[in-house]
Image (cartoon, rainbow, N blue to C red):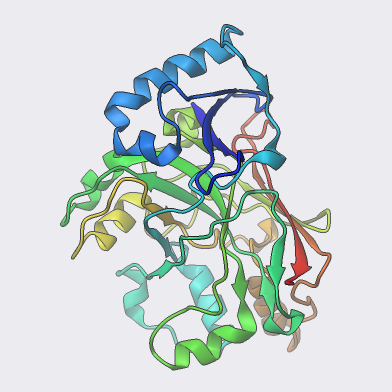
Length: 327
């Protein structure tokens, strides 16, 4: 099934079930008012939500309405926990080269993660506000999972069964702020503004054979100003799958229902498939020509991130955002 959170004036929105073709929706008021409520009692709510989804597909849902992705908030507009990984280690290697930073060998065996701000997550079609173009505005297209409650010390082979939903991500980055922040040795903060998510979150069964339990084996299509930036396959060259990421982040803590775990920027060794962020493009240009030619984003630029099934149909809906100057 596909789930969305629609605007209705509150901070947490109103949960709706969305049809597979992303055209129709029905509110889930009698089941769970918000997605977080549903995740807190997933075993109780999921069957009723699935029944509503079946009714929607069969045109039996009472008070169904046209789904407008512009009215969608992030599926979890304020999540208890948002942790982003760097599961595509070849991407990490390239970006660190751009900063002149050596990559430790341990990055290939021990996942790299950071905990991001989760109190202000953006909807798929919300403008992205930034104070200055000089900050080096960049997109990062990713896949993310939403978990149920996960015990401390969960093994990677067990981590997969705690995955409830999947989403697409635009993990905005301010590249020119990153080096000085990381030099302090205390991680990202100013360089990682509000993250955006796809209009809908989906249960893993919606992916069919493209989901192997830990990876999504489909291209992630990224356009900037209606020009293709890349379409690397999210299931290829993912050094750590979501089960391994879950095991890593539960080494010393448990996770509460509604925790979001991102894959990090999707990246393939096959460079003909393009990239999911501008920093990677610029690094490849630097290596090839001695200087990067592609600029970072400017006010008015538009970013679109989408994943299509084998028949060319949108699975999550599109993240479609414009960069604007912050008030």
